[in-house]
Length: 296
Image (cartoon, rainbow, N blue to C red; front, side):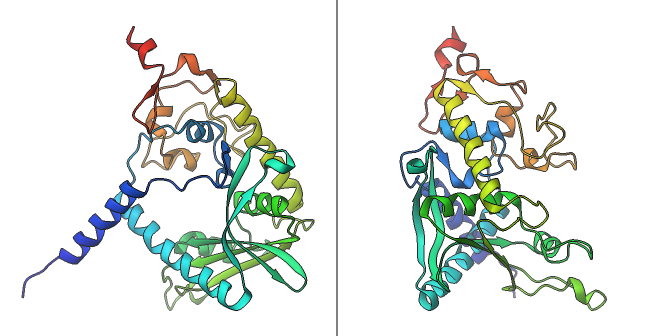
């Protein structure tokens, strides 16, 4: 008998090929903003709106994890569609309510007389356990950006509530800590009306969603005015500004920077907002912003 990794290598190569061929999901409507940008750094959103080429390559391990999560995601959507008539991957347009944002809601369905926006997030063991067991004095909490994304979609489609689901995609636990045990396929679910307070925050779903839509809209206006936003992350430090980038692989904060697709590009620039005339940015279409200027 000989050891073999043929199946793994074939699977890895196919997922990588699909990633290269597929690219990013097209916007639901011709907007600069996307609902999935909720909670992201101002500058990262700016790079995405410009369609900049990521400076960091997605690892094979990350692609395989995304692939697994995607198929679990589709399975749950099929179940919700079969049993509750949910419309999956619903196109959402926030322009009629004043925001240059669109997106795809995981689903929209009717239940108990309410119109509900459904958002599903597949989670590894650690974030799932953190959300399920936050401590005796705290409610189970979801990520604020996930509430904002679902809430923005709910505002756009006239929904009454949001339904956020965390789905565990792996097993975890030992006999010594049964409280920490996680079974793959286990869920944590929140059903919140738009005027309910967000657990751990206090503001309503409607309030945090409107504030985030306004922030993304401001970034859209900056890009249209030929300005790259400052390196600001909502909730980081006193004012959100990140003066020094943490190194990838370190434990320094903010963690969002360490995992950003544009880390190397952003590291060449100061933290403040910059005129697009003063920066050199490669684009996904093979062109550059200001290449000729920088070569002169």
